[in-house]
Image (cartoon, rainbow, N blue to C red; front, side):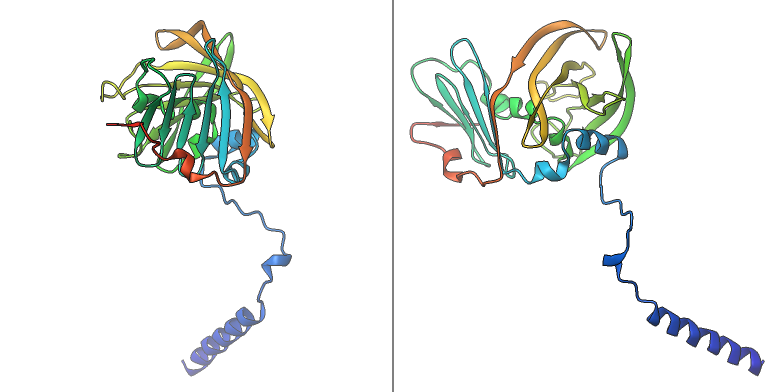
Length: 262
C-alpha cells in the first residue's frame, strides 16, 4: 500500500512538472480557430460578398434611387442605424430615437414614414443586415426557379427586436458561388400579425464597392402560391458610397419645421 501511494505521488509530481515545462507559445503555432458566430452556410454567403469583418469597418453608407421626379438619396449611420432620406419634396430622417419628416414644399407625403425610413436601406444592405444581433437562423426548403435550386436560410428575430419582430425572411443563395440570389419576406407591420404570404426579391446584379458586393439593381417578382413567377419591377441604386469615417451626427437630428412621426 505504501509503495502504491509513493507511485501515485511520483506520477502526480511528474505530471505537474511536465505541465509547467510544456508551455506553448501559440503565436508561433499554426492553429485553425473558428471564430464565426454564424452558421456555416450564411458565413459562406457573407464571405462571398466580401466578409462581415470588412462590412463592420464601415461607418456610413449612401446611395441614390433614381426616380422620374428626381433622385432619392439615402444616408445611413451603419453603427446606430440613424438615417436620412433626401427626396425631391421631402426629407425623412431618424436620429436614433425619433422619426421625423420635413416638407420642402406644399406637396403631401403619400407614404408611411415610420414604415419607409429604413426600408430601402434594409433591402439594399443585404446580406450584411442579416448579421445583426437578435437573429435566429434555420435551414429552409430550397427555392426552385427556372430549373435551378437555391438553398434557403430562414431568418427570424428574437422578441422585441425592431418594429416588426414577427417578420420572417428567407435568404436563398447560389449553391455554386454562395452569392445571394433571392430574398423572400413577410410584412407584419400593418397587420401586427404573423403572415404566411411571402414576397420575393431577386438579387444577382452585383457591383463591388470597397471590396464588398452590393446590389446595382434588385427586382420584385409577382407571386403565385408563395413562389415567384414573373418580373414586376426593378429598383436601381447609383452613387454608392461607403465610408470608414463616422458621419456627422447632427445631420440626422430633427431640423426646424420638421414634425415628429408618432
